[in-house]
Amino acid sequence: MKKNTRGSLIWLRLTRFTHQSNLLSNEFLKQFDLTTAQFDVLMQISTYEPLTQCDLAEKVTVTQGGISRMLARLEKDGLVERKQEWKTKTISLTSKGREKLKNAFDAQLAFQSSFFDESLSEEEQKMLYSLISRVQKNSEAKMSNR
Image 1 (cartoon, rainbow, N blue to C red):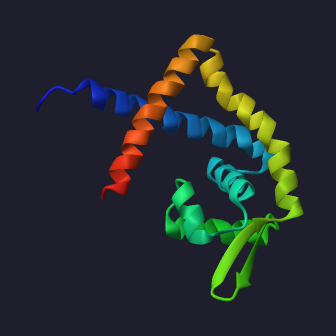
Image 2 (cartoon, helix red, strand yellow):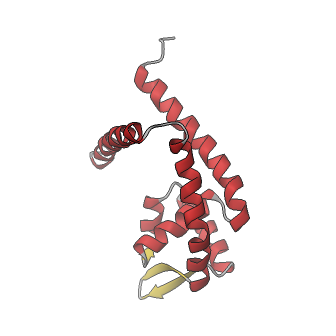
Image 3 (cartoon, helix red, strand yellow):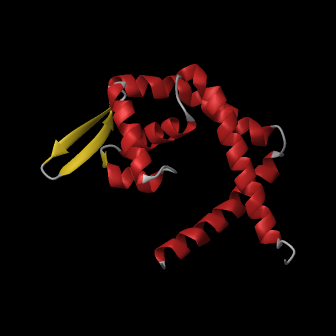
């Protein structure tokens, strides 16, 4: 077996960090009765509403089936509403959903920022953001070329 390349080591670190960050965020968000995935879904709906389930699935890290189940639960909890407009079903936040997101938003941003604020200087954070943005844009280009 070949030795790992630097790129594969970076990818493994990013994957591990994402996993650990999600585990810690799930624990942190329990105080708001949310999971990391639910927080992400509420954020995306808030930003792009009204949007279709298909559009939402493209923006989050949840499968189509997972999105269906999550939306059913969020709708049951009164956080989102789905409206049928002719052939299209759109998703929006309810006032209860907006309030829950508002309560969790600043705390979750501070929690996530702490991973970087505690270990990287401002200059290092700017550099990391620039580099990871470049890598992400490259992966988006590969996705669109499929």
